[in-house]
Amino acid sequence: MAMKVRDPLLFRQLFDRESYTYTYLLADLRFEDKPAVLIDPVDTQVQRDLKLINELGVHLLYGMNTHVHADHVTGTGLLKRELSTVQSVISKASGAKADIHLEPYEKIYFGNFYLEARPTPGHTAGCLTYVLYDSKPSNGTATATPQEPRMAFTGDALLIRGCGRTDFQQGNAEVLYESVHKHIFTLPDDTLLYPAHDYHGRSVTTVEEEKKWNPRLSKSKEEFLSIMKELKMDYPKLIDFALPRNMRCGVPDEQ
Amino acid sequence: MAMKVRDPLLFRQLFDRESYTYTYLLADLRFEDKPAVLIDPVDTQVQRDLKLINELGVHLLYGMNTHVHADHVTGTGLLKRELSTVQSVISKASGAKADIHLEPYEKIYFGNFYLEARPTPGHTAGCLTYVLYDSKPSNGTATATPQEPRMAFTGDALLIRGCGRTDFQQGNAEVLYESVHKHIFTLPDDTLLYPAHDYHGRSVTTVEEEKKWNPRLSKSKEEFLSIMKELKMDYPKLIDFALPRNMRCGVPDEQ
Image (cartoon, rainbow over all chains, first blue to last red; front, side, top):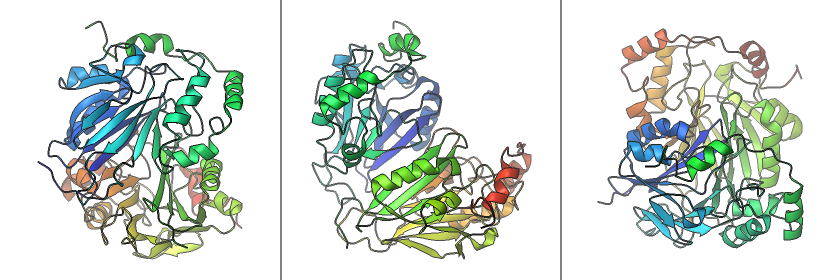
């Protein structure tokens, strides 16, 4: 049964201080059971997330991953153990095990909202950017204009004034540049962009801001390739532990 | 000159990982110069904040403090040094030096938005909760209904599932209980509440949620007083350094 509310979107940004990871909870408040999704949960924060899910009374449908993370273990495996109706979601191109494998441009519905899975490979081959749309925005509530996406979850493809590294996990700087310019920078200028990480306490950016101020991706492709080639980055601390687990969407063993 | 935009409010939540402090940047995008306020800046993050202010092209009018902080030095002093037109703001009841001393219920305007300074003493005698209103919400953009505040900045009076301590700095648990129940819990249920801190990576709550789930303030006054009396808390690390500076709104010496 649909209910009338001021803003139909319940939206919560959650931070893991250890890995600097953002997790996002979204639900449709127009429905009594508040259908919900959780994007990029972190295994060590799952108890916090479950408590919030319980207190808010939302019905979690999907535990979604933007990609196979190298810096933390996804929480989708633990979530599935605690909430048996939750399905794990990741791109087919990731090669990871999951309940649902998304093809490019497939949609995941929760209530009247849906997330469109735009392929944004380059950091990994299976990276997705989830773009939020409202399929029924004309019920008198304060939503964005129809067809205008309100926000997008960019994973590690695009970070605030930065981007994911491209030197491991099938990384490819040229592919990343094309992905961001084709599938993120073409969104409306005021679309809010929520990344998987920020290391300076910033929480959100916009398409306009990144087109103008991103020190890497606002440049020409040649300059971008040169910048990415020059980056000297450490081997990620948790990669050898996290990758095999995340290839199973965080399910602790082969179940 | 007024411009038409999808959402007239530019809103940024910023986090200081060391002191777990949230800083908030707000601006009115309906005006070309984007008049703005910054709530509870942290001294060590002022360069980050200034860079963002510059990139977003907002015109910062006020550096606002919810109260005299004991756990970090406010950034308003450094902001004033870098941006000569910025005025520091705090409650008159705080006893602190500042350019503007707010009386209860006074309003601070930036563009068509204003913040109402609700007195919420109890953690300190001068704590304010800033409630955001839109004075001209009927220009066809997606704002909240007139008279319905959209969000409030509660400082340390109300934290997510918690509240500020009441055992120093003129703290008084009974006064805090009355403040929250009279001036925060009376806001519409879906008003977003943004605190000065969170220690578990949560970013926002609502009036409805805290009335239901706050483990201290959802209780009777007697139970609340008992809970606060039993708290065994360490002496704040930075208090002897931070308090005298914050009594001058972060201005480094007597200027």
